Image (cartoon, rainbow over all chains, first blue to last red):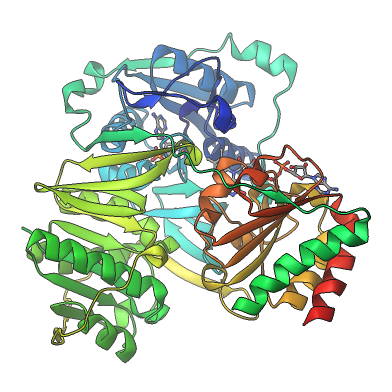
Length: 265
Length: 322
Ligand SMILES: Cc1cc2nc3c(=O)[nH]c(=O)nc-3n(C[C@H](O)[C@H](O)[C@H](O)COP(=O)(O)OP(=O)(O)OC[C@H]3O[C@@H](n4cnc5c(N)ncnc54)[C@H](O)[C@@H]3O)c2cc1C
Ligand SMILES: Nc1ncnc2c1ncn2[C@@H]1O[C@H](COP(=O)(O)O)[C@@H](O)[C@H]1O
């Protein structure tokens, strides 16, 4: 079983709103002193792959598309014991174009040889497009299933896939190859690498391809959509903190605000 | 090339999402000088077909046996087969997980551009512009979709219904789709959680718990409070990831988008990604022991306390006043 996990490097989504600034000219977030981190759903995807390999065997390749510095997310994946790592070096500026990224990832996946399962995150925590997995499946001409929380072997050449829906879950049997977009679940909370493995990850090779080597033309990027406007919403509500001498008073004050709304329904 | 297509799933019924997506579609079609075509997929549902025809110029119903159950590959093929001959300027879908799943793939097959979680869509001299939250809700972007059709899933429940007064009903046609390709993905089992009352997205009162509750047990106390109020339960991602409550309770950027009259956040810090799911609430209130918790910036009223001290008494006070 050859598994590719697509990992995107993003601006730390936990950057508090009060520290968040935008670059009005480039129409993207200012990096400032914030960290660049692997997207959380990509980490969930890697965790899903690691658990699959532990239980059933297989090979895991971590794949990213981004500037040279995006190598960092691959080192993290190697520290968690991904078998191999590959970087598509792309310095395309501006808002990520999910179609161009999907093409780049598809081209890299074809270079990697026969792949059975491609895992992506359900969406990236920066622009939150939630598109790359689906577009990648189309580029590879394979089926895809979204919001997947677990994959298990089924009959030969097929997987049992459990995914979340609005009201519960669904189980599918899917013929390989398959693209699955992974969502968060109590069982795929990312593990922490061992210090020794972090050190060793720096000695592991990373395969790198330029866009040209993958026959991709960077001028094709940003032909999907562009950011016309970007702004920070300024909406703050004045919170009235319920006061009172005693706890009972406070609870009564809070309860009366609640029941007032309940009565108005 | 000015027509607008709305995609509806018959199994969901003629719900608020269907009403909202048709409303958004109607306005977009009118502003572009095009027709509105509603595609209805799944087992025959008279309410959906007639509800759609009250707003759309044309309704295409595909209810053949192969579409009896949602399955991504067949539904995608069916939508492509129905939408392609229309050459629409835009294809709109709702915010359910099926629509989210189909949107990028449908855009790819139709040669268009996709966007999701749109709160607004407008035609700007032939280019469709979509407004959506980005960076976990810390910013708002307007994206200009460069390829047609624009395939967009929207916060359908937040969209105003169409003004259908004086319209004559659109035609309803059955569409028999030949040659739907055999699916490489087979549905084995579908589990729908038993939940009493209305669905979270339609709830008017919501009690929601976060990581600060510290475990699954306190959610039972919250449930008692919610029962006393007649409220539905929700949770933050942290509480869902911990396995304290099912994933379907998650509210936020990657959870449900809710719009109740009152949203009560208990031991939830108020990360921007959480706020993205609750921003349309009429009133937000919170109980948190940290007066500086960001959630209070979104609250009409709040209580700075340890939840353990107040949940029981609060339930009693609310029960007594009922
Ligand atoms: C891409 C992405 C998507 C995301 N999507 C979502 C999403 O859809 N929904 C979502 O919720 N999150 C989402 N998140 C996660 C989000 O950023 C936060 O990590 C999460 O919402 C935190 O949950 P919490 O408020 O329950 O926990 P915490 O942030 O840990 O807050 C716990 C709160 O409880 C309070 N507390 C502790 N003990 C007590 C007590 N005894 N009494 C009263 N108060 C107490 C604390 O003061 C604190 O404010 C997403 C993150 C990313 C990166
Ligand atoms: N530049 C990238 N490199 C690798 N994977 C990516 C990249 N962009 C997106 N992805 C994958 O696609 C998922 C969804 O991203 P998005 O469509 O941008 O929301 C991410 O979680 C990744 O798994």
